[in-house]
Length: 357
Image (cartoon, rainbow, N blue to C red):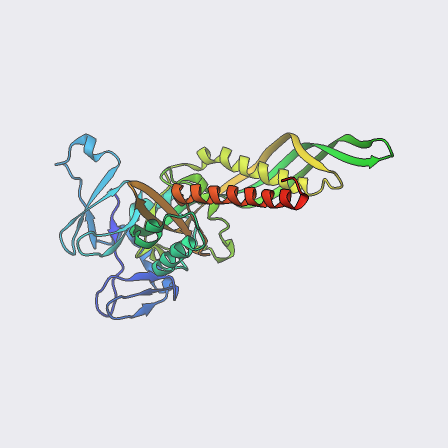
């Protein structure tokens, strides 16, 4: 099992955490701050760090151990139980932040990381701002809803670099209207437009966690790759992190489909001067595809209302928040009724003006 490591403050011995505001390691007890690069030595001696030890947990039944890992916290003696894919967490008893070194070494070691820039309070504020202006949102949900859980998670992503060769055929139409003294005419001409070319892509993201909804993660884009830095475990301190459980090979087809749609949209911008343009056939082949492994910052917020769970996600770098909201059916019915009534009254007024009644 992987060892766990902990970053301790040299001044007071407190557990250091990465601060999204200062982009430094900060001690919450004495307020000391340290540059991340100053702690780089930890990454070189991960397996020699004995702040935490792993314990095999033979007392557990074999079916109970599947997908889980058990560790012993030497700071307080408590047992830290995590999923096997967990790469960073906190001790539930003493709150010490720890990193599972074995889940971040060798081929499991990320190539890069985008550090958190938005903190927990900004995530909460973004959620409540998301509620504003939603007239069909249930009042109770907005006024009395509480956040059941909020956590900052480094989500594993595969970043695909690839050359693509694309051959796309579009069906286009051009419509012309005219009239004479007797008839109105419409002429529709049909065209076949073909675009062939090579397009290079860099950093096409596909999340590598089966626990994360792909559509939700896609909606959080874009991430600014210019702010990505070489991976260091210090960035994980104070947050949760997972290692990938969806391999790069298993993500290749999804990356190809994303590239395919992007190429179709790109080539579509060159088919101009028509009334309508639709893709008729499309072939995209990837060449020299290569995947890098990165960790991206995401705030996950869970709320409940009337027994239903609602999950929201915020890009921990840009602050973009996404998630579905419930609809008050009573409000929706009233809005529909009032709209119908307004239309009926307007029609009645027009008929009166025309003298129909």
